[in-house]
Image 1 (cartoon, rainbow, N blue to C red):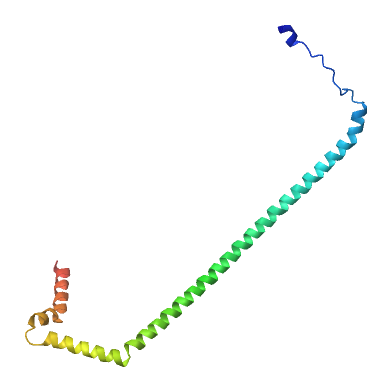
Image 2 (image 1 turned 180 degrees about the vertical axis):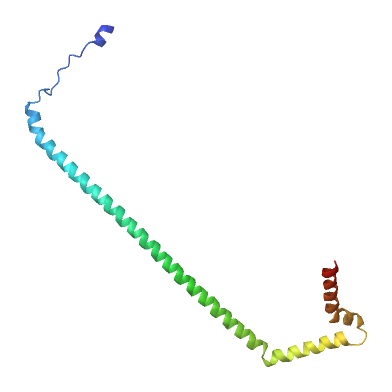
Length: 149
């Protein structure tokens, strides 16, 4: 192929006329005008629907946030009330169990055994360990150390 033939204009005849007053343009003009008007209508409706969807979504999000805060607060109050009531009931149950006849007998037996073991003969070491005066002496030593230094 020659370089000159590649750069020349093509010899293909166009089937569509380039005159603005041709028959095809006159027939297609109203159809295109209707299509453009329909496209504009669809665009405005879609923008309206998108804005409405955004508005409804924001209202729904705010409502869900408010409802979740309300439900969370109600659950917190219910949990707090349940914990308080459970603590009171368990402390009452523990106090009634502590003051029952069988537990009192068991406590008296244990105290008697402890007193016999500690205050019995030959247990001078335990008596010296559990002597209440050690607390008085320790407090006096601590006070002297704090004062004199």
